[in-house]
Length: 470
Image (cartoon, rainbow, N blue to C red):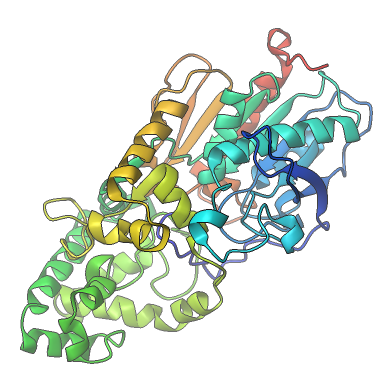
């Protein structure tokens, strides 16, 4: 989710292949009673500590956008490891259910048989369909594993899967007993300048190596770059300083200027900040060490030093990224969420302002899918009406968020009502506490995992809050 490019740090992620996928028959369209088409949805199981016939809970890891899940989701991965690490204590049965479209293992495991016409073939991709998938899976698993009302289900997820995890509890309270909805931006928003506003703030957070001087230097450097882009001599200077610029004439095109500086002339992690990464300039602290080093020259030279430091490992990460059909998530932004991250003039964005506008970000909705801007705006508004945005109604949902995570700007930070507590994780990036535990973890992340476990225990052990399932 987010900047459409997931850059993995060189720290081991803990991912492994894990158990193979299993499949169950899923409806193509849950909202059309005349549609009898089906497909095979993948899920994964960890029953290491589970005893059939017991009253132990069921943990459900919700899949989401991005690469296909693997069996690592129920054993060791960045998705739901806070649940995995709680299995032994609870004797829980754990499932991970793949999101429709994201990771069709074969075409029979996809809701449609081709992608020849995107607007037609993606029509069954939505959060509403995905939530209905989870309800159908609940019925399948209940029958297949002999579960009863005493087996309380807890949903887990981070980012978009965190949104779904929370909504699954709120939309189907008779099925799902509780939810840990980590870093879940449940307020849909068309224009999302706050993403880059919070990114700038993240570079002032001292606990991760940031400072006010660092954020200001990044902003000054990008402002100067904006001026240099305006004339031939300036563009020539930039082409000499930055290897990402093929030549000075390349920068005459506004789209190339946007590519170069609209979202930063280097990679500036905040959503993906990992304080323990080891590659050059791979986190806030390492970048700020360069950006506050006066020996490196002015702010533009320091930005060039950051980009140069990152070049080798960043190129390798980009080349290894999943290169599947990238518009799955784009479709959902056009039809449901917006989330278009802009760097507008007058905002707190510390990149070159004015190059990355709302029009730039959402033009593909019309160009690829034929969805007009006014319709996109209407879709975003309806999503908030449908789910309740920052004031959802219900109980037993925990909303954890990280201090340096830009998605926190659209997440539940203040409890909307009793039974929906929040958890603020200082210095933490995007659902970092769902990753496998490591000796290098921030103390705040360690404490967050402990707080999540305590909340789950409380909700599981309260006899007045049992889920009635027959």
